[in-house]
Image: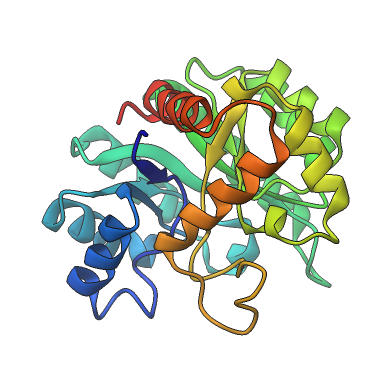
Length: 257
């Protein structure tokens, strides 16, 4: 069976940041061969790149996350482009970027400006994107239609409807499957994941966020991607070997790893 790639883990955050070697050892033992670490703000760029360059299993993505929109300055976009101009082989995507309407004051117009600027960079430097979307799927799809990236990417932590997922897939984007599907009550997401083309799915944990069922209140961990995979196999008609192989191939095609 193909080893797992966690396509979304904030490995630069606690509890991993201070115990990288031990955390990687646990992940490898669970069958995780690689982890993509997305940055959320300019102040984390150097830390994420350092981790990726120091540890062979880790790869980096750099971006400005919408949930901390007030942190992002215009010169942070310049810093992002500087990283892209002198790109390390370990930098495989632009992210985590996107839109979010969860907060009381989301500064949504500013989010859209930053998203469009980063999509333009992704298009210019031919990188895939790792997309955050919370209560904004239709709005995000509109922006993606406007930019038409040569290399698309993934809508991570997806919890929308089947039609919204299909709209992203039609635009060329994969759907990130994480711990949400381990909850029986998440029937909409589970039914959606069961019906989507296997060629459009990726595995992720979003660790230390998005804890799996049975681990509520604990930091999520990349080795638990094996349990996300088990939950996915219960929802799909294909064999576990075929699911593992195809998801690994999807990841290779999008991120080149």
